[in-house]
Image (cartoon, rainbow, N blue to C red):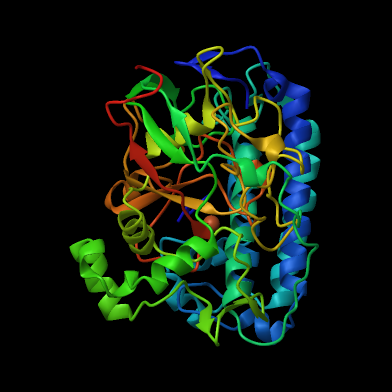
Length: 472
Ligand SMILES: [Fe+2]
């Protein structure tokens, strides 16, 4: 869902040793780089189709691409030029059109939206003014920026830069999902992810073990962490086993072949009702043609057996896990598997450590328009040995979206707080369509359990039996 939408390992709120992104100059540079990278992607996604396509609604689940385009600019103007920079609104009359809470996606095509050329010009104008503003900001040691906007000064204009960069990157992911839903010939292309599974992948254990004990969940130190990731807090997690890699298409096809969609015992009551009502029989975009095929950004292809399954809803993931004699991991289990370093007792920023993402560590940033094969990215492995916890596919967890102890809504309630409750399930890890700026091991995504247009897969877990190998 993530409507709107860095410092160190967390030790219950105290900064750890790796402070690189918290240095003022580094933070400013990272923010500018993230803003520019997001705009490059926005431009690509909105110039790949013609104007008629931009104003069309490809699915009631999605906005017309031209709405995203102007909404990105409007939010950037609102947060950086007005709130941080203290400037007057450029076009106050259009604000309501681009307020995500005023108009549900299905209603947006009927609004008097800016035309494509107007939306592009608005975005260009805002960005030019923002870059001028950033040049004049004074960044403090705490990663904040002072001198502009009383309510953000001292506690978060540096955050505002990161928040706006993350916001545009998140809309780039949303727009990529719109591209996947649009019909017509393919307009996007990208190099394939690492094609060969690493030599050691065949020898990977099916699951990894995480010993029981406390770990630090969430963060109080990441400068661009959103309110729902905060604060860092201790969580006791009993020992459990987790799939080393996400569930593959081949494994999921076995679930289908074994009658998983027809066996009510595998589904929750709500899940079974939805499966019946929606007529679910396979992941979204799959079709049977003597073998499973699927459409990927306008191209029909045979399903690749060893890629992680994607475009399944929470109910399908949950039923698969039950069929496999397992369960979905809780959110705390997922985060412990991704962050906990038993050698130091600290929680890392990422599975591979505290250093920033590189292309060798995870499939992020729309560099590839599909998940890499299960077992890829050994350089991104967690201490537990689990792979691909960041990138490739979002991973459904068993957890409802809830606030952490000590949660404070910021910068406004509609960011996260209004979504807390049992109707949303948490997803973790980020997919190939997610920007590195909006992907860290504390990041929490959430969506309805029926949603399938998002780039979501899953992995499964099981509680450690009494014959816990670490405790025997
Ligand atoms: Fe937004």
